[in-house]
Amino acid sequence: MMLTSAEADWLRRIALRSSKHSPTTADFYSGSAGQAWFIDRVGLALGVPELHEEAQKKATLTLELLHRLPESHAPGYYLGAAGALATLAQLQGPSPRSAIFREIIATWCRQFPRWIANLEGDDLFVGWAGLLIAIDGMSRYLPPQKLEKQDSIMVDWLTREIPERGIRANGLGLAHGSAGVAYGLKRFSRRVRWSTGLQLARYLEKSVDQAFRVRYSGWCGEELKNLSLESWCNGAAGIILARRNTRSRFQERVQLNLIIRKLTTRVLSPEIGFDPHYCHGIAGFHEAWLSLDPSAKNAWNPMHFTTNYRPGLLLGTEGLAYHLLRIRGLAPTILTGIGHSFS
Ligand SMILES: [Zn+2]
Image (cartoon, rainbow, N blue to C red; front, side, top):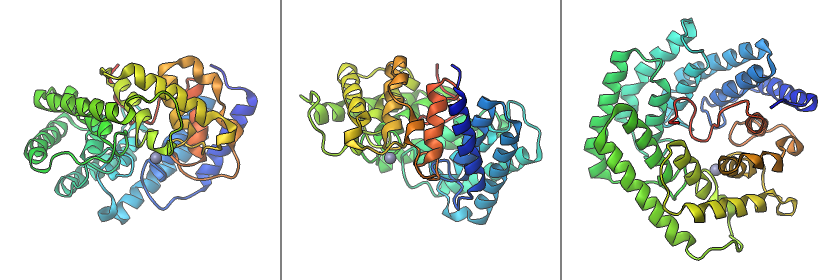
């Protein structure tokens, strides 16, 4: 679908503003890797090669930040070094040969053992499920022997650690919760054809179904006190995106669809005054609704929500602008990780 000239202007303005802002963190969530992805995608959509150059500068900045503070970077996807590097690799095109690409691969291979030694959390945000998604994103770029080695290290680690530690996710959502852990495990296990991992992912999905049933039993659209708890990062909107990406069954599908439709309609109403951003704001709910009903794209225009520039892909103005690309069919979703997906 075509962008109007006002929309194209708005996108270009935000991408240029973003290229001038230097974040202090490297992550995809609100740091330089997310900015790089955003600026590059706007450049592609508008046919502006200079924005690709700006995105590459952000990639260089991301590598610098990862080198400067290697200890402070968790291994996960959205807030972690692994997600940041997987993002940068995908910016380099289908068969990259550049110096920066070699640096990305070298940094990944250098940091990987440290991530394995320090895997604390389980979620997509900072934990092992996020690392699984990031490896998926890297799988077409890593040399085959390296990839095979890292895949088998992950399988060994999960086989050893999960029975010891159990699964420690916070709530039901995709970024922090068990829907995200099941999702990461399922994507990885399908790619490497690991049947125990697949069984575990199905078991986790069932436990999400169960917890969902308890949480929403008898709910038919009355007030929910804290809408953020139903969002992509923490709740129902995340479940729907995870299951659709892996084309997995959800036992409570009818109830979940009802909830997403009702919640999105509520957060879209101006009197609620809900924050428009992606993570636990309107854009995240709208993305979940779009996955159920593509005609919902006309129900909201993120361009109408710009006020002051606020940096960050998942929390800021970049995310709002990115969502306009989503609505126009010009970019892939960022809420299930970028890169490989099962379709
Ligand atoms: Zn959030």
